[in-house]
Length: 332
Image 1 (cartoon, helix red, strand yellow):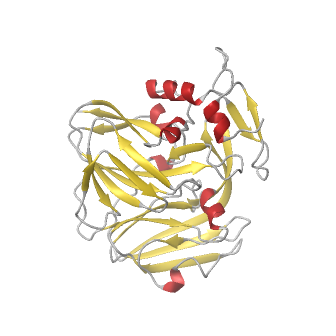
Image 2 (cartoon, rainbow, N blue to C red):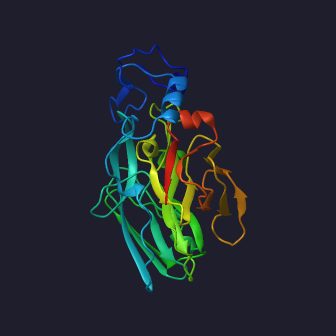
């Protein structure tokens, strides 16, 4: 049974005893076919169920994942070094839904989609060595200021080869990195991207920090996303609400790297937040909803006034129904 975004939202007859649909990609190189066990829920059923449910009952992928943790700590010094490995890996993006991804990972650790967050300080020398352990040429293109020969466009790294990117980190703010080999949309859609935090020389005030990379997954090769996530797993933060304290600022490094859709968005229930576009200045908008094109990013700072569970999600209802939603659990 071919699973499309239209079919996911339109749905099929629902058996009372059937579990959430389990889909498996039949072949890593035949992304337009799926096998299904169980019965597919309609978008209406999914939206009603997930909006009402929090915790273990939510049918979301489970298990620990480094990318779901706060960003790496601020680290002073003249040089900050990373070694990234580009590889091919099957990942679970929704409950029982597997996707043949291309992914970055830190050397010696699991590759993930999105890739690991890179964190440096403005003026610090940033050194990133890429090892291409996949079967396709790849690069890393960093947003920000750097020499032309470090741009990730003219120096494709062949399978088995390495390349080291090195330059002073600038400007301070929130940026992104991604592969820039053509066809570009395929290399991004497959998962080769991540967040780059360049801290100002005077660190930002302490806060509870979290990286959120908004993305989508085309699981059947029709150039439309069947699932939407933040940090790579549909409904994950409904199953595991993010625990924060009302007494401390919550700082989110929010990045949009969704392919096949012109915009994505972030909306918070019951609260307003300060939004700093690209994180490069002190000017902010006080709002509860922001819209971002691909590659846009910004810093969100929330000071919760109340305790309890507060939903966050894409303010495109279809994206919410297909996985991009979760909850903050605010306590004292």
